[in-house]
Image 1 (cartoon, rainbow, N blue to C red):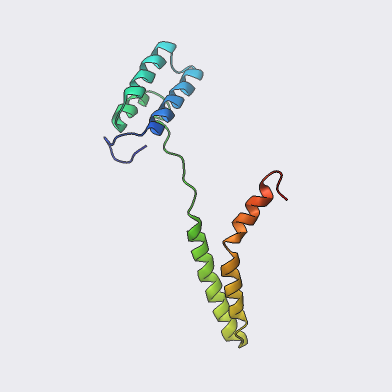
Image 2: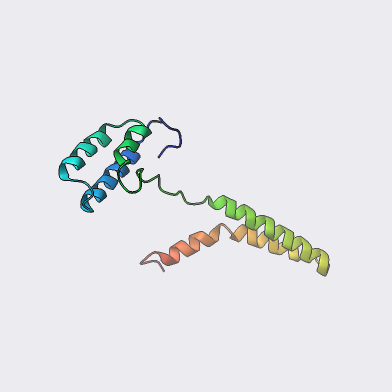
Length: 127
């Protein structure tokens, strides 16, 4: 849910609250009448506190939060690029050759292709 108290909620947050209420109904924590009343209130809710009050007497006092977003792949590429550049520079200085710097170029060019290749191998029907 939104971090700000009193912030307006999204349709997704409202739907998550309704799913959570249905789970409580299925677990026997709510009667059908209580579920209907709370579901109507959740459907009409517009702010975070309006939703939160529906869960105060239930385990897990608030509806589930928003799903976790996957990490940004550019961060991983940036870290890998920095480590590769530092390693290539150290190797070039220690062993006295510029060919180690070619390693930097090869890895930086091929790095974005790795996730695509892995994804293609996991897809059914791909060769």
